[in-house]
Image 1 (cartoon, helix red, strand yellow):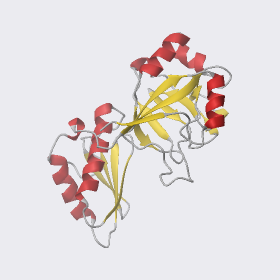
Image 2 (cartoon, rainbow, N blue to C red):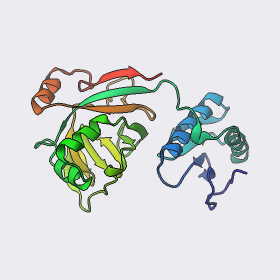
Image 3 (cartoon, rainbow, N blue to C red):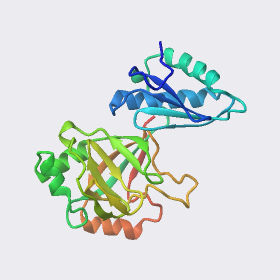
Length: 252
């Protein structure tokens, strides 16, 4: 039976959040099946279009439902969610349709990404092996957060299970590629970070002038194509879309 209180250690777990929210958690730490479940369950809730639900979003391992308490109460929503959870094993569900793959040009290392060698060493790889590993990967956008449009992608191979830094890098620029705990992030704005700066792109994750300000959505996938600093400068000079030279294809 699905548990409906936050103190249980069983999953999936349902917990009320305030007077107008419900959190459905599929694990207490990141895994591919838990993230798959969160994304698939979000799509199922949205497809049901239950009257009173105003927003559905996901974190790394959970689905959050915000509702209008004047049209729907916690008990009604919990009953609906429990029935939906029992309908299938969500950790094995198909990912939502309409996902996309972005192949993004990236400079690895050089003075544009000065912590690449340090990160490669932490992963037990040579610089060449690290580039080969990163360009062969096709991580999924697990969630979007921290800053507008900023994607957390993963999971990389176990060699990239490297910790965050113990100190902060004062600033990385927009488009910076950073790595830690088997995840890659492309920064949507210049900021400080405890993640290692290993690559630099011209890809703009946040485009406030666009009809779709967040370039990437949970469930999308990215891959990286190694380029030189000169190629990055050419892309920056010619790009007017924010794509940063990325190639886009619809997965299905």
